[in-house]
Image (cartoon, rainbow over all chains, first blue to last red; front, side, top):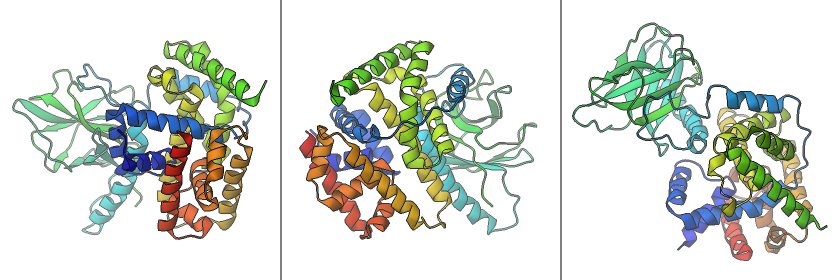
Length: 236
Length: 187
């Protein structure tokens, strides 16, 4: 049974007016309620009549080639999960939360940096990433510096069962693939100084997985992803 | 042949192409692109304004569509509406991200006027036989206007309020009540 509150949210959702955190909550509600999902799809179908009134633009030469190249090429931001040797928990459809992730990164990252820089003349990070969990809730902040130092601030208390460990990963480029930055056994602020890696780039993926202690046996992420996010350049 | 029948036949063809694409048929996906990309560029451009941004949006949307084609369920809607939803989401996300960056840059009145004109024009272009046209037509002018501004050109509540020159809370209430009335009318 769909109530008035859900109908109201469905209307805002179809108009593109819901923002985090209501957006994430409503998406979760839709995932749990086929009736609600059907209501939204139906409404979207009705409203698409307005989109069909848009005049078709000429399709630029090369646009299909770019689509084709992106499909053939290594997954970029559309498929951010690192190359995994096993996956107990497949990542959710990235469409739902990646754009959101980017905006949260932006919103949080800026405030975070601004707050820090007022404290002292600490060196500025090259990139900042806010790692989100499946519900798009920020779970950790990563700051990566030019000298390879990586600073992690957990925002949630990750549960680490006995015999398990938290492992932080990044993927500097396709050739290197996922690289372990370090491990830690409980959610606390921590610094890692991994071996020389390329200077971090905007769009670089960071994630934290839960591995068997003392760490992934393969050198690649094997356990479930707890949080992940793409790096952004801080505006300083 | 009526406009509606024509649209239905085209929609069926796109459904079939998307289902073949879900099975890995690249040629079907290329045909789907040629059929739909032009209009999707138009949909994206209404929201992001600049043609080169609309191209990025449509490119990303087709890559996402290829990767998630298996999730398309023709029983729940047609391929064209599915693609439109993907394009709209990406275009709106882009707009919201940019708004956060450009927070100190006030929206120009001319731009708001232009977007307003485009949104109202879309309503006039709806075929008379379309249920949405009928139901939107039954709403108070202000509610219809607010809904069209948000949907067609992707305005936020605040932008719509600034264009309509009404308090933000009032516009939010118009949109909500208008959308509830529309759902009632369309069901």
